[in-house]
Image (cartoon, rainbow, N blue to C red):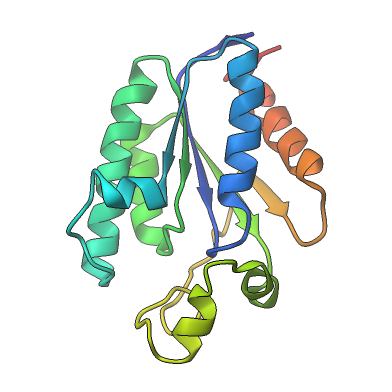
Length: 177
């Protein structure tokens, strides 16, 4: 499969399905011969952005750093999947402008569904006041206003979400089957 560099930014609440979709799609594209890297928010926070907290300023800096690495990879012909909550619209737009070849995927599931899926118990801890500034509970999530793709993971199967993203990447000329 032919491809060119692009950052595919999966954004949504914790538990919406960002990692599930990005990893499943990455397997498919790698098997087809694409150069692809995944920058998962949880993994990035333990390595690249260790030491940053969860204030708005720190969250924005986290996204800027992920965006910087994504830009380097993208301009070198790599498909980059970023799977990060990235709750604020303004910083997502800033990163989009910096990278250029950027496709935003809104992984959308209702808060109640995300809470139901939460195997780590983070939402429960946030509701109990043990975690402060938790996105969707006591910190906002600003949904994209015009994403290239919206995956409604409460209403569609994983394969449908994967196909929607594949179709958009093909339409935009980033992959050629």
